[in-house]
Length: 226
Image 1 (cartoon, one colour):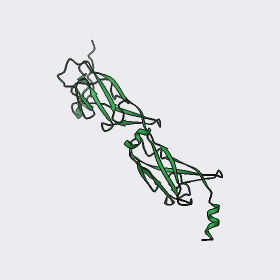
Image 2 (cartoon, one colour; image 1 turned 90 degrees about the vertical axis):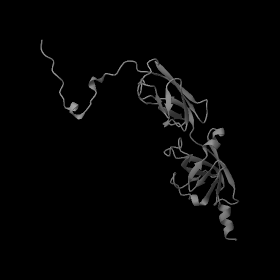
Image 3 (spheres, helix red, strand yellow; image 1 turned 45 degrees about the vertical axis):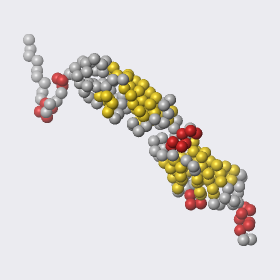
């Protein structure tokens, strides 16, 4: 017991702990990400955790607790719905085994969140009788942009029929000139986007349609000289 007293006396006090997440883990879409901790001491020295930050502080000597998720061996799994009210900031309670007294350090980690959505159509008009995919993209505070599906957005259209993320207007519809569509983020109705899609009016040019493999090698007919 007496031998352990000098070691405890030499233990440097922790000034603060900060956390970062793995920017390559697509935490914008998935609810898990590797994280790293930087431990800064009162004498201005610092240490970082193993794993993401490739430091020398082993995760086996760190305990991380959170009411909004769990952290095991440097991988954080979080509940996106729970952290939404605090603008997707998660509160972590970090305990270092090397620090006497089992002191808990409060650490906040800002996770990615959606700032806006937009339509990005693959074609400039919708053809009757052909499924038109409604491509919706999410813009995040990290600057990254990812496609969103119907698990994240609700879709609405004033004409035609929505089939999943496809919009279909019947072949026999000869009246509709354009269709107004709207996407609403399920997590926050204030984040939404609207677009108007023209309906192709003229008939398609079928002269270039290939009906069989022989058409690939058929030479165009020469025009007769007058």
